[in-house]
Length: 302
Image (cartoon, rainbow, N blue to C red; front, side, top):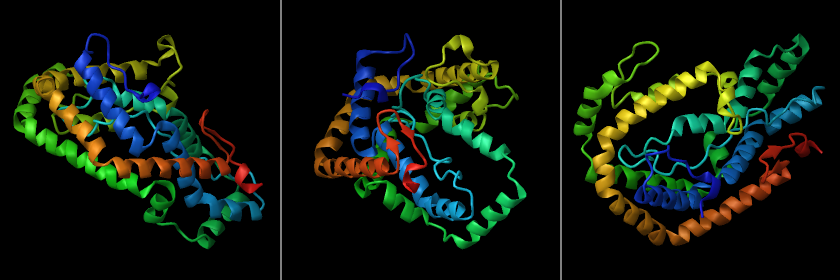
């Protein structure tokens, strides 16, 4: 069962076939890609791998409050078909939901950017940066993600690209989007296309201070957030109008491909699941509380 990792569909857009495809795809993908809890544990390992030595140096320099975990990544809920043009969730609010899921990290990052260090602490930071050897991206990935997950992700995304090419017509989709783009009113008057709308939503996201958490009631949403989700809904409506025939005609074939992927890669998926269990255990040793997602950043120093 997928549980809370599933992206909800907006009212009126759901169907039994759509629900089944999204649910099954998310269930298979999260087994090797990691659940939200497991990917949050990965973020803890990443932060420690990148910042642990720096943290120890800062403690020795007289700043034990320096927090190695402050910039850790948070994981949004699963959206297994999110890289597909034609088969991602219909009008599901993927972008706004992801922003809400990671808003705590966004707000903290904004606070850190505006934080002013004392002259002495600045000198300590500069000294520790110079004396702490950098950690490569490859090393960080190896420490924080099961190797089987990395390989299976690549194969999954290749499968989605092939399904798009087999069942969809990218030129027809682009033409349809272009014809309907005048329905989308962007704040700055930009004209969105099939190739630019995803990047536009990403680059025009509200600040963390304007982004609600998943538990905030809609009555508390900021005007900036309401404008953003309104824009997202307009764009997704055009997107869906241009791809819904492909989705509805071939969702069964995509569901079959998802099922075959799970069967064909059963051994690797099981190995990835074991690897994620190890990641969670290692993160717990650094103070990660899996059920709540919280982290005691001082645990690793004790």
